[in-house]
Image (cartoon, rainbow, N blue to C red; front, side, top):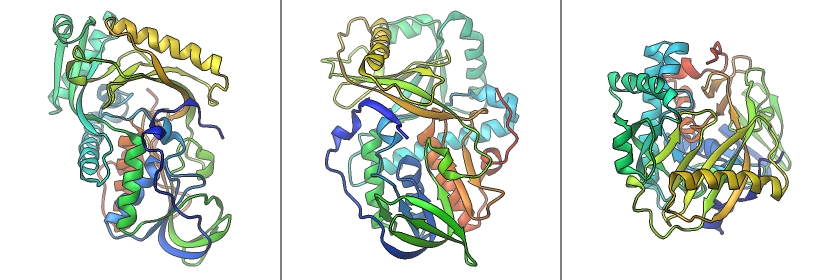
Length: 405
């Protein structure tokens, strides 16, 4: 399945990444991770660091799927606001889940800063602004719930926003504890560190079948097989590969552009991550070499566009929106792409053991917080294998009751 179309920015920042062999022959391990993107490699890292033997198989190359099209924003606030989750989950569970996201953001920063390879991580604040004056009451309710529950948030009125940025918005929330990262570099650096900690990685190795055995499972690949107790499906936006009956994702497409370097970003206050209350929303960030990344224009179609003209039409719409926010810039498009992304009906990821298949787990971080969800999933599954409780396991379990927003 085609997951993206266009010219991707991230692979060019690391043109000769570490390569891994294809699996051949027979292997045995405690856990097999299927998928070598953000979720799979993060799972591999968590298991390896905890001393759990694991093998990761990727049918193509590490980080070659949706990770290459990831725009690299790490934000604990979700596509669904805390106040939305308070309605569907109850405030106590909603706060617990948001705190898990906040902790995951902070941990990802710590992990990235501790890797031997630089992943271009920068800790940032986020500006979540009202797309229209009619959104202000909802945004204010969100701020009050964040503040009441101890999240580091600040309310800004229109005049305050105008002193920080060259645009005016009716109101905004500033959240602290977020970050931006080069996801392609991060996943490769994490894979290298995981291998040093004991993870075995095999590229160009496709899962062909899974068979039950007296000891667990046998995973057959194109040129080998693996005996294992546990299987972790970190298959990204191809949920069919995970099997089972619990994942009911909406697979859509979104667009992104990366500009050529801008001479100065002096009037972009502290290079905040920017996003808005409209749905679908637009979002923006900067890069270490003064580029601007902007994404959005989501469409309810699974397949990415497949012609340059279709893609460029959307790219020019994004560029127009960018110029409206920052009229003093004269940005030119350097890279543009369309990519598949997945969402769940309730805004939560599918993480945990399949109730129908003991020892088989989902780590599917669908939604705008996929990287955050990847770490939550990795730690939840690690805890399960270690026999430990996890505070959000009940909230994100695959067979949860879906409460739509």
